[in-house]
Image 1: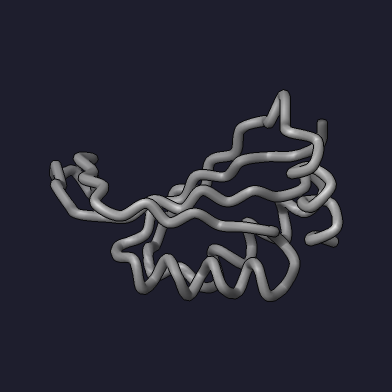
Image 2: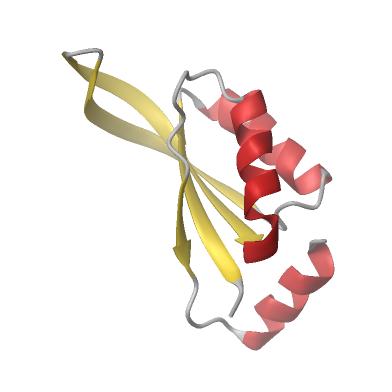
Length: 104
């Protein structure tokens, strides 16, 4: 199956919605879920950070990943946005059919 689930943290829901809308409008993703209320603890420039964020769950075709990644980077306010993809190994066939019809 040539579908990826891409995880991307964003600073807030509004930023996530703007990125999600662009990805869906441009048919790079059929759907983006925005999960609010994330708390991220990480190091940045040698300092431990503790920030509120939201998480985007983006579904895309494997062949569209580079275009999707580039689009996220162009819209994202972070210097180094988290963009991590994992393979989808199984899917409900009607959802898969809709997915394929909704993306290029």
